[in-house]
Amino acid sequence: MERIQSGNWASRLRRFLAVAEGEHCDFCAKVIDVRHAHLIERATRQFFCACPQCALLLGAGDRYAAIEARAHVMRDFELSDAEWQGFRIPIDLVFVFRSTPARGPVAIYPGPAGATESQIAADLWSRLVEANPALDDLHPDVEALLINRMNGEREYYLVSIDHCYALVGLIRRHWRGLSGGAEVWEAVRTYFRKLRDGVGLEDAIHG
Image (cartoon, rainbow, N blue to C red; front, side, top):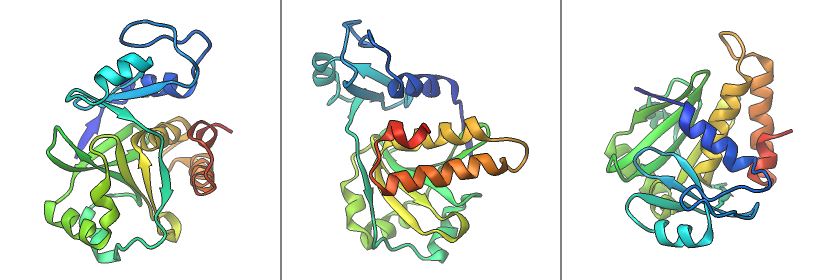
């Protein structure tokens, strides 16, 4: 397991979600609208705000990828309890995406200190994609399978990667003590309820 440092991507994501008037493009410093494009650096997983020109120029390259908002409930997802055990994730909450730098699937699960990365066996991911062909369409680095099996839930979503890191930040912000406390788990339940209801990302993690 690899602990991911939370500082840089977390601060970028806060800007990403709470844009103030007069926000500037991270690449050319041009003033941009409240609704603007976002890019992620594939190697570092840092988020960046971009003007239309920089987004078009950089968003389809090898270094950066453009993020397009997505949140889709997968109602007929197939994942047995035995297959889930094969993930070897210590909590029942994880997101999985195809990583270009890692050249394969990567699982990340949240905790009080941020995000922890775990490798997934290639054969396990292959079986999952075979049973759920929609996973084969995930765009590398920017879209993920988000799994919620907490408290008996069996919820599966195809989401843009910003939804996943926002959930990590939500848990880190609300965690108290050794077990997290009631507040954090209520915040997680509210997050998934809003995700099911099609609420936008900013509203899903605030209030």
